[in-house]
Amino acid sequence: MITGMTAGVREEPRETVRSRTPRRLPLPTLLAVLVGFAAVGYRLALLFADVPPTNSDEATMGLAALHIARGDGFPVWFYGQAYMGTLEAYLAAPLIALAGPSVLVLRLPTLALYALFLLLSWRLTRRLGGDRWYALLVVAVLALGADRVVKNQLIAGGGYPELNPAGAALALLTVGLCVTGAGARLPRWAAWGLIAGVLLWVDPLILPYVLTLGALLVAWRWRELAGRAGVVLAGALLLGTAPMLVDSLRHGRNPVSAVLAAGGTGAAADWADRLHGGLVLGPPLAMGFCSPGRCATWQLWWALAFPVLLALAAFTAWHTLRRTWGGPRSVERVSAGVRLALLGGAAGVLAAYAVSNAAGRTPIESSRYLSCLAVAVPALLWPLWQAVRPLAEVESIKAAGERAAGARARVAGVGAVAVLAGVLGTGAATTVEVIRAAPAVHAEADRHRSLVDTLGALGVRHVRGGYWTCNRLTYATGENVLCAVVEDDLRPGFDRLPAYRREVAADPEAAWVALAGSPLAARLDARLGPEPGALDVVTVAGWRIYLPRR
Image (tube, rainbow, N blue to C red; front, side, top):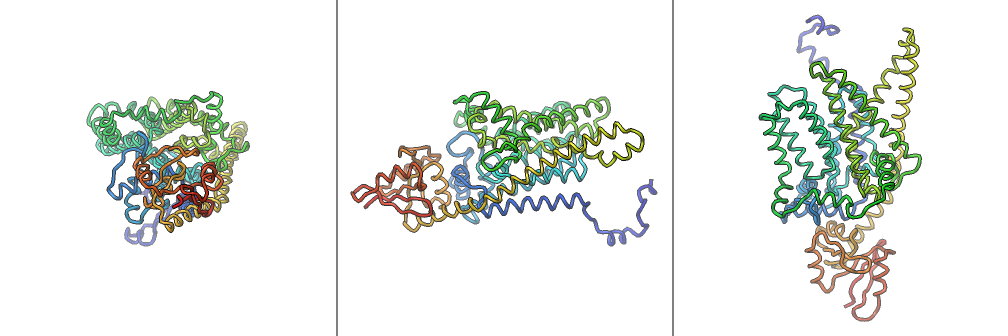
């Protein structure tokens, strides 16, 4: 035993060995660290370039964070609706209290959540039996940053940046609960319940993963759940969902109904459109294989590869479970069970989206509902890696006379390499497209900053504008300018904060703001003139500010 443990090590005093043999990271781990830093650095550079573009929905979350930072309110839900929790606002509030409102400050917590997701995915891959090189591959795939991907990860618009790290954490905790001793599991049960509860409050899109991973725990740990572990889990789950439950009880709201309504149940889409948007456009967009705002035909190859790979990965995991079923619960068996749960969760997410009206009506923008497919990447790519690994052994197989087996292994390995090359190559190409589009996005943000500066110089405190103008403008000014929403025909629009409309209505000198060339600008141009009650116009950087004639 001692000889085996010390083989290959010079027999020196322990202190000498420690001082002369510094610990070094294995090469694939070091490369994974470098890729991770590059991925976070790339996204940080995007944030400084104002990419991805912000909007009024993100600004609404910023306003919630601003109110929390000032102590003016502690919202449970995204303003103007009874679903989608405001966790991102609470994370950003301390930074806004220190540095003031800005898009960059609002997005720094989402960047940290992405970095956490990379770390957890690397760890999850290792715990599921993947070697360090496979963990590097998973990190590399998740490091790619196409248009839809970086929007899901960085825009603090509610519900998306936190789903992936939380889903990966649930999977890691599930592995730990299935392999550790009972005495060490109560904190893990508490963490699992708390994370699941917070997720259900924030955005139930992650629910399929919660159900599949939870079903695995019930199947394998039901005796433990019948005791203290069940009490701890239930208590933590209630604590996580407390904001939602308390608000529902206070106001008689049903958040489930609100979420279903948000999915488009009120306006039916054709089934062909739903399936095309959900199964053809959805997976390539969600995994980052499409250009900004569209999917070219050549980028849709993943729509064919994804279901095949999903089925193959599920079959591989199920086969491992069947093979190890009769014996003790080994690490291999636990890994296969968690992989199968992750794949089941991914299938559930895709199925729920494909049958929704959103998939048929707005497939490009609504593909954000599939953002948490990334949680299953360590399980999804597993069969490809298993096929690639034997390539180095083909020659020895042939030398042993097993030519048929060697040929099959070579074909499978080459096919797997081709798919992985397609994944990395397509993702890299779409990442480059985001970089190329960055100057235009930055220029638009500069024009908006010019609008804010001009309003400040004019002393304007109250304005009316379109939905996608109002809250963005109000947040950018730290509520120094309040905006009420109007439609293109000048009728009142949807105000997420009705108090703004009341303050604007009370100001007879409230201005109007519209993008140059927009329908709203055309309508307001008709009111220009020298007569009393008409409007004067100030043009700045693509914006038109309409001031009431005094």
